[in-house]
Length: 495
Image 1 (cartoon, rainbow, N blue to C red):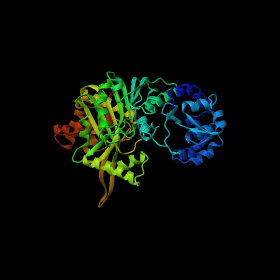
Image 2: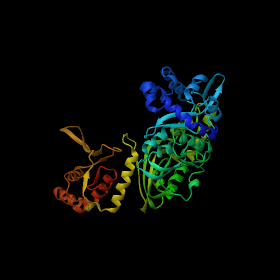
Image 3: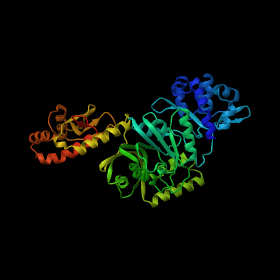
Image 4: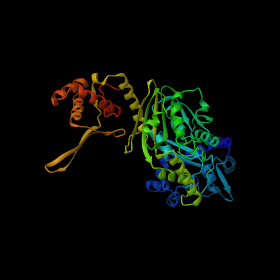
């Protein structure tokens, strides 16, 4: 790969892609949903058959998406005004007699702001290839999950730490005025530069470890999909191994991101953390945060036992766990986790906002399904936390979020239906649920009719149920705080 020559051919390559409509919408139209699904599953035959009727677009599909050997003349026609000689010299293609094949992965995708093209190293899906230590992966499940979970409200400056192929930086260009991206891997920086140029986006690209390249600078938003794999303190592949022991990469990112956020700035990142026998994982993550100056929302989306975790990442590295040499690697890895009393490895999202107040942390499980973007929810969550910090809920009026429902579950009993649970269920955002009793249900019902302060509602309920108002308030206030944090009830005026 030659960075300068790749950059020089980007305008003509873009022209060829636009002329042939090598984009996400056209691919779906040309291939159809069933063939697109086959492509996602790594099944080339249906894609090859469907692309045969697509002319020059079909040539690009077979060349870049299937990594087929393609006739030189066909590729020359599809890539015009580029020449085969230019693409081979740049390291985009490899010539072999009267055929050429892709030397890099290049594919269209929609990052949420329309079609983009992303350049990375080949992933071996359709043609076996060896991954070097500086291998640059394309857009995988982790990258996509961060894309969908990143706040996209307009910001001035954005920092992408560990940019890889540049997908997060490319996404950031749609909502940030200026984008800076860093990576310790020189090859990643080079390919991210090509990705940016191919999409006509301006990105400041810097080479270096973690925050070193931007020391002393602050940003309105930080995004990061760091090398968070929990393992030995050594590097096998830079895209996943940090060289830090266990969950040290996540600790570094979470503990240092705040100092590089401008006042009010936010961070969204993927992270992993170990679950140690006899310890609460929430306390572990809390220890990584400063005592002052940040609101943090940590969402655990998954928890894997050590055997599952090691097996998953070994397969990601192309290792067959049945092979004796690979089995030795697995034994060593599992021994290392066992020596640290690791019972499991958690994975999820970390959202931070820089404040001028004592640190506030909410760390919780979010393992159920939901459909709304989590990035939008993160910003709303921080706004609600700020409101709670500044207001006494007893003197505030509240309203029930419009998608919140009261659900009651009954099971058959000896004398008919018996209620076994009542819960408030938010139908939007992360779809939170809170179990409640009849008194709390009545309290929230009073918010629907509106008009009364929380303290007044508590007084009425206490009289109606013949309970002490002060005791009811002591239990109701933290509950209302929790309902507000999760967005089931909201301040009567905008938070």
